[in-house]
Image (cartoon, rainbow, N blue to C red; front, side, top):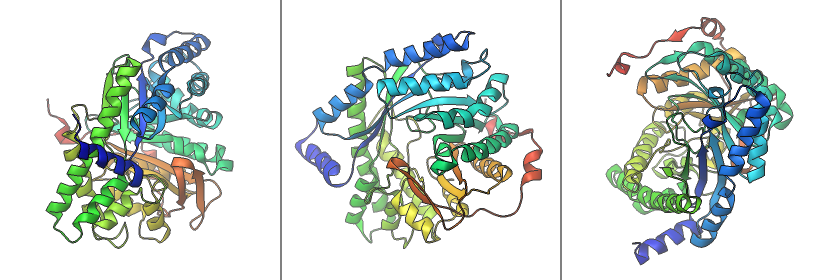
Length: 450
């Protein structure tokens, strides 16, 4: 039972502090769609999604109305497409079916045009990765991901090189839209199978036929809570974040269980990540600054983020028995007004962001770099981030936007949740010879845990 003061606290968080459920995501298995005719496969994929997710948007709106909790996005994730396209010569046909199905059921995004190539690439994997620039430039709401490394397998440097080339191609193909296509693609190390957040969502091979998961938000709620412990010791800061994360996650748990019951679909997980938006008052960077930093990115930022990420996890995990996904704090530059401001004034650099990814939930997210950044440099940035994930046994990712025709001092504008971003400089020195080696960077010794 919820107590009266808990209900009033929740109403205040929604009304004044921008608490929302960022997404209800339905994960759908497509394994039963497999066939060796690409047109039949595309039709089966379309039919399966339209049947299973027919009521997802309607139910989401009903829950919003009945409980007064804003639900920003309704989304679908599917089985990594490379796993069902072994006999398909042109996977873009399936991409079009995914996009069409998403529009038919009315969701905001669909994820899963993905390949898992941490140890090696099948012919189907390579075809799908090479098709991503065409697929994302021809579709509107479809998202894509590639997992190039893991703690158990190491880093597939052939895939890393291919991803750099593919991102460069995609940036040019969508250059008339500030290279928007790159915002719908993420390259992972240690990707999780139950992530409800785009662009990296897919319904993993270890999942069931269908599940509904929820991703919560609430940076504004945490910042407001920290205003009550100004000048106090970090012990008190951590305790305040934990208590606040508990309350935020309870809202997500309520929505997830209600969605599961109304859709008659198993409850997957609650991802308790603090996911910012470009709106004022909804920034992870401003939480870090509330701890005493003049500007996010200055010395001390990594320590502050480590405290925040850990406290969010500790508080949230007590509020739900099914916490999963990424769960922690996201630092997407273009989607966080505080990060945008810090990057624009030079306080936040690519190197500092990389350091911060050692202790946050994901990695280098929604970062715009000059359009003339080479494919080899993009691959090297991916390799660095994958190494952090591999060695530290955590999920890391890169969602990099080499903005065609843009240079340092310019800005890209995407609108909506994707926001805007200043162009951040990259190192001018080449890594091409390093990337051209190919092969696989071996897994670290501590991966041998059997």
